[in-house]
Amino acid sequence: MFNKVILIGNLTRDVELRYLPSGQALAKCGIATNRRFKDAGGNQKDETMFIDFTVWGRSAEVANQYLKKGSRVLLEGRLVLEQWTDQTGQKRSKHSVTVENLKMLDRKGENEGYGQGAPAQGGYGQPAPQSAPAQPRQPAEQPPVQELPSIDIDEDEIPF
Image (cartoon, rainbow, N blue to C red; front, top):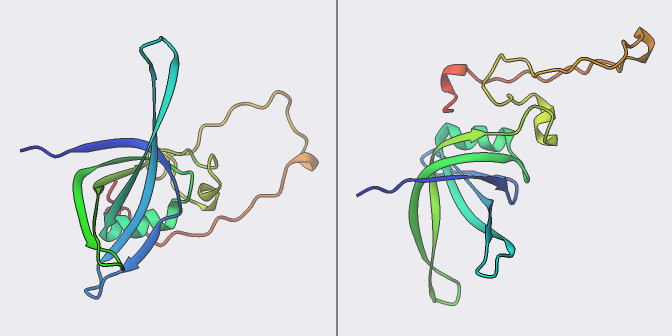
């Protein structure tokens, strides 16, 4: 049997991080994906799917640190059926994705959450592409340089 899901979309809410009694990190969030198609009448239609997902371990902590509502991500994982009993005693269930690989797709500075020193697509240490200005600026016109906070993450610990 094969159970693999690959989704690209935007987060529908901020990441909710919590720790289990065992100390294991668990993050829950949701993603919205869009599909454009033509209906039987030839009209363009948009379909949006909202899918909840779960991330475990160090990936959950990294997701909580760098992602926020609206962040664009690629998720690889497996489809799971969550079952529980609600407060009224009724049995409930829903499908969600357990993430095995998460990749941030926003470019540095593209999403406000990334203005805080998060890595750009392509990994750490790659400078963001810069376009040449139309006219050279004079020193008095340059904005002040902001100090970015240091990140206490070892590159070997990054799961993506």
